[in-house]
Structure formats: C-alpha cells, structure tokens
Length: 389
Ligand SMILES: NC(=O)c1ccc[n+]([C@@H]2O[C@H](COP(=O)([O-])OP(=O)(O)OC[C@H]3O[C@@H](n4cnc5c(N)ncnc54)[C@H](O)[C@@H]3O)[C@@H](O)[C@H]2O)c1
Image 1 (tube, rainbow, N blue to C red):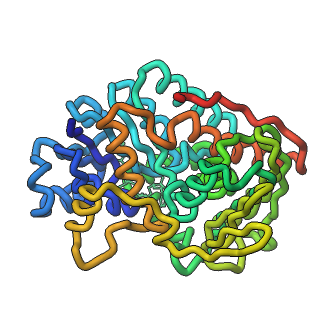
Image 2: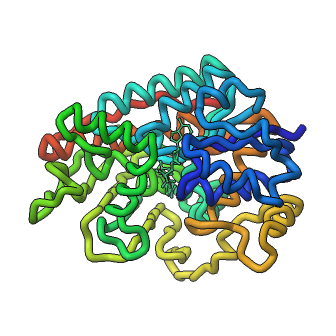
Image 3: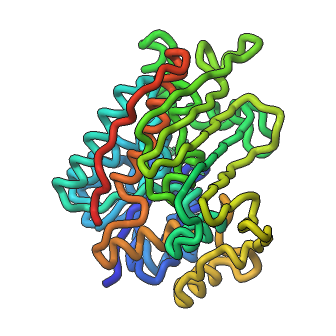
C-alpha cells in the first residue's frame, strides 16, 4: 500500500518538508526535483535519504519527473507557478500536493481561469489534489473542526480571519523573500516576463495571497463566500515593493451559511506576524485560544487543541531528530499536512483540502481584490461546488 512521491521545489520552504515526506511510513520511494541541481544534491547526498532514494530519482525539471513512475508530486515552487504545474502533473497521471496559494498572479481573471482548469482536470482525471494550507492544521483549527463536528458552535453567526505580515517583518522580511525567489532560474524567467509586460509584479494585491486568512473560517464552517465588498489601503509613501498596488486589504463577505466573515490581508502594519481567526456561533465561540460560551471562557493548551497523529507516524517523524519537536513550522502544521496527503493517496480518498475547497479560498480573495479596486462594489464570488462528498 506504500506510495512513491517526488518533491518538486527544494527551495526555502520545500526543504522543510523533505525529511517529513521521506520519513512517512507509507512512503516507500522518494524522488527529488529542482531546477537548481545543488538544491537536489543537499538531500540526495544525505545518509538518512539512502533507504528510500536512489540516484536515478534525481531530476532537474518538472517535465522529466512527470515522465517518471512516481505516484504523486509535492509541488513547492514559486507561487506564480503552482496551478500550471499542478495541472501539468495531473495530466501526466500524478496526484498533486501544492504549496499555497492555488496560484498568485497579477491578473484576477487569469487566477479564476486556473481555478477552473484545476477543478476540471481533477474531476476528469479522478486524481487527487491537495492544497498544503498550513492554517488548516494549526492546533486552533483542529480544535474548532472537532467543535464544529460536535455542533458546539450552534449556528455560525460571524467569523473573522487575519493574516498580518508586514513587508519589513523581523521574522520573514518580504523584500528578502522576493529577492530570494527571483534569484533562481525560475525566478529570473518570471522577472524577465514581468519586465516585458511593463513591470506589473508578482501578486496583484494582498488578497491574491488570501489563503491563511480565508481558509480557517471557511474550512471550519464548511461554508463558501457568496458576495464580497472590500477596501484597500495605499502605501502612504512610494514603495517599490508595492508599486501601484494596495498594501492592505479588508473585506466583508456574505457566506453560504448565512454568517458574515471579515478578512484582513495586511502587508504594511506595525504588528508582529500574526495569522488568527475568531468564530462566533449561537451557542459557543472560539477566540484567542479559548472556548467561550454564555457562562465561561476556557483557555486551551496546544496539546488540548491538537489532534493525535497515528502512533507509527508520530514515531517515524520523531526519529528524524529525537532532540527536537517533530511537528515542523507554522503552528506544527507541517507534520499533519504530510500525513494527510500521504494517507489520502495511499488509501485513494480525497484529501481534506481538495481542489474544490482550495479554489473557494482563492476565489474569495480574487473577488475581494476586484471589489477593492472598484471602491467596495458588492460582487458575487464564483463557486465550483462541494466536490467529492
Ligand atoms: N505557510 C505557508 O503555507 C507557506 C510559507 C512559506 C512559503 N509558502 C509557499 O511555498 C512556495 C515556495 O516558497 P519558497 O520560499 O521555498 O520559494 P523558493 O524560491 O525558495 O523555492 C522554489 C523552488 O522551486 C524550484 N522550481 C521552480 N520551478 C521548478 C520546476 N519547473 N522544476 C523544478 N523545480 C522548480 C526553484 O528552483 C526553487 O528552488 C511559495 O509558493 C510560497 O507561497 C507557503
């Protein structure tokens, strides 16, 4: 029942997943792929990789690894590449795990076209796609998912989600992240394309990277956005990072379950990096690591909020480095994302964050940005349905 998996994109973020994918007990063969050969070599030469990796499984292009016999690809390349590469991989018969977001491009209509192609390719091929949304496996989300399943919220009333990541953040400076992503061959090609198209750069506005803010409330409530009205904030001084785009965007959504959802995507804010949501129901509320009802506010620890991993998976992950926490970054979500994808492929079931769910997070952001560009005009949000039951 074991599967083979190829890791495409071993840059800064992809590198943090390599050991986890390799260690999972249901992975019996691992392939490595990056256009920068030294990024492949870093893992190919590791003694810990030799039990599941062979030199024949080192690749320097997506085209090559698509011709290999591996069952699935984990695509952790630059954000403007994800959707096209995911579709290419599925057309080659591979299941796909993709880093967030579905895709980030300057043009919202182009993003929606890719959402369409992704869902269509997935539906037609019967292959599985999973968005590696770290928010969905933060301890807070796991706890709320259980509370929602137990109907402890009652009817959902209101939710808010925020992704605050200042451009000059001390933890992950976004100017530096952009410089690094443009430094590789794939980055240079994009920079040249941007130049040819008149300098319109990577994102198109903060809501074109909406997934850490929209996904928590949408995933927990199992609801999608119907309508949006949004506004933008322009940098007070000219700043090359933002160009003519908004640096912050705030949106209000009408949701399919009758609730209202407020989302903030801020890239220019005097605040430490924060990714948080609050969800209010008629019977109970989750906010700031506490469960709140009419009588009490009960603080929760990380261990109380987290789901358990299967013991054999936990043991395998722990063996990577017995002296450190094995859960990985972004609230310990990495270990769970890897397990969810591998387990889903090994058992031929739809992963928790499948294509139909993933495009809902993305479309909400695209339409919010369009609304902000039209001074808050109320816009409908497209939807592709619930997908696999
Ligand atoms: N919390 C989160 O979920 C989170 C956090 C950080 C990054 N990310 C996502 O992870 C992705 C990667 O970010 P990063 O900082 O590691 O970028 P990076 O530029 O450091 O790495 C991307 C790698 O992909 C490789 N690549 C591109 N095209 C390729 C191809 N056709 N074949 C093989 N390799 C190819 C590049 O050579 C590069 O090594 C981004 O899309 C980002 O949105 C998500």
